[in-house]
Image (cartoon, rainbow, N blue to C red; front, side):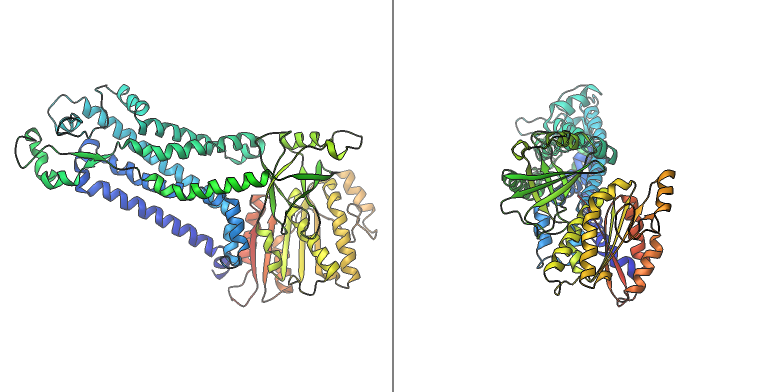
Length: 570
C-alpha cells in the first residue's frame, strides 16, 4: 500500500477532491431546485426534470472553469520552475496535466448529456402546458404574460404543438440556440480527440479543438436568456404557493392569493470562467509574442530512419534538459503548431529537435528544408520557423535523483538525448557537484537504422566515462525488437567482435524486449534505501507496465528503495 501511495497517492487525492466537489455541487443544486419554495411553481410546470437540468449545469460551470488551466503551458512551466511552490512530488502532478484535462473533458461531456436530456423533457412539458386547453394549474401558469401586473413563467411563448413547439424553443430562444451550438461544438471536439484522429489526422484534431472559442462564448451567453424562472422574494411574501396552488382559478381575485410574480436567474457562468479565460488569454498573448521572435535555422541534418535534425538559434532562448517546444512553419501551414522535445543540452549554443517524418506536416517540412534534394542547400533558402517555448516536462527532474532509469521507445529517446548530452558536458567541465551518480538507460527500437543517429552520442559518453575512470556511471541497454532472418544470421557471425555490429558500441545490442521484473529487482538490489527516478518517453502500454513495476518493486518501509515513475506528456 505504501508503494502505491508513494507513486499515485497525491494524484488520487487530487482526483478524489475533484470528484467530491462535483458530487457536492450536483447534490446541493439538485436539492435547491427540488425543494426551495421559490421554484415551487416551476416544478409544477416542468416536473422533476428541473432539478436534473440545473444540478449538472452547476457542475458544468465548475468543470469549464478547470478545463483551460491544464493547457496553460506557460503557467505550468512557471510553477514547475518555482521551487517555492512546487516540490518534486507536486511537479509530478503538473506533468499529468493532459490526463486531468481529459478527465475534466469527459466530466463536461457527462454533465452536458444529463443537462440536455433533462431540458428536452422540460421543453416538452412546457410546450404541452402552453397548449393545455383545460383550466389546470399548468395552463394558468403558462398563460401568464409580461403585461400589467403579470410576469411570465413558461418560456414556451407560442402555442405550437410538439415537435414544432420544441424546435421553435430550441432555435428561436437565446438559451436554446446557444445550447444547440455549444453541444455541437463539444461533440466535434470530443470525437476528434480520439487517439486515432490525433495520430493520423492531426489537422482535424487541431482545427476542431479551436471550436472551444465558440463553446465558451456560447456558454457565457447561454444563461442570459433566463428561461429557468422562479418566484420573486416579494411575491413569496404575499403569495404562499403551499396555500395558493389549490386556488389558482382565484389568483388576483382574493387578497390572500395575488397573481404570483416571476423572474429569471441572473447569468452566473461568466463568474466561474472569467478568471481562467483571462489567464488563457494572457497565455496566448505570451505565445504570440514569443512566436514573433526571430528564429534562425543554422543546420539541417538528415538522419537515417526518416529523421531530420533542426539546429536553431533564437535570442534570449534558455532551456533545461528534457523540455519541449512548439514549432510552426508558415511555408507548410500558417496555423498548425506541433510539439517536439529538445534534443540539445543547455550547455550548447544552439537548440535542436529531431523530427521523424510520419505525416503530411512533417513531410511538408522535410521538403521545404530541401531534404528531398541531393545538392547542398544554402542557409538563406531555409524556411522561416516560429518557436513557442520551452515548456517543462518530467525529464527536468532527472538531476533531482542519485539514480535514474531512462526508458525511450523509438523516437521517444529524444528527451534523454538532452539529458545525456548535459551529463557529458558536466563531466567535461566539473561533475563534482552533480547529484546524479548512476544512469540506467534503455532504448527499444524496431529497426536497426533508428540506432544510427543516436549512437555517436553514446560512443562519446562511453569514451568520456572510461577516461575519467567512471565507466559504471552509465549502464545502457539497447533492444532491437524487430529483425528478419538474414539480419539474425549477420548478428550471429559478428557477435564475438569487440564492438557491436549495429551501434559500434562496446555494449552489445540485445534482441527482443526487456524482462522488466528482472531489471527492477536488479536495480533495487544495487541501490537499497534510495529513491530511484523512472523516466519514460514512449507508448501507453509501456507506461502501464513501468508504472506497475515501480509500485510492485518499491518497499513499504519509508527507508527502503522506492521507484518514482514519471512519463513525458505533451
